Image (tube, rainbow, N blue to C red; front, side, top):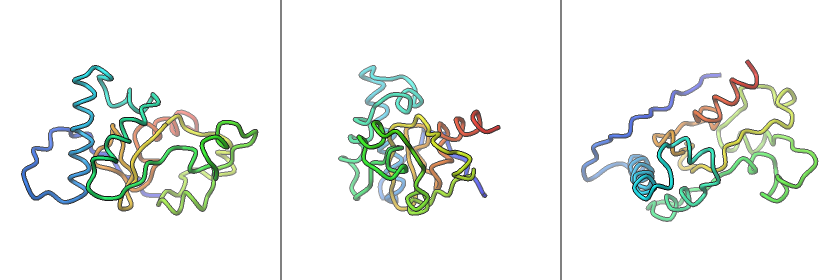
Length: 154
């Protein structure tokens, strides 16, 4: 499976007339800068480690196009309550494929393992988060998830 490297460049230097995906990237940076200014966080990783779904809600509300706010629970075939209170958690292959994210590891091997990534934005076939404002096509290429995958299965 081909993996995609996330660009962690934050100084985009945008001028008028940017493409919609570039608008989303710039918006993620702008909201992150606001969170830094008000001392909610200092690093993009802190947003991904915490329950800062407000960060992604802020991005989604300001973005000019419809986009989805996703969380790990979406990939286990249920609601957030189902995810946290269920005895058994199994990856939903159909949902992974719907969001362009075939697992790099067989799902029967991954079993009930989930990754501590709370929220991210999905738009136009790409997954965006605070650490990867340029987006990646496969959620398993988001840096935080990729690192956990490597730590667990290497």
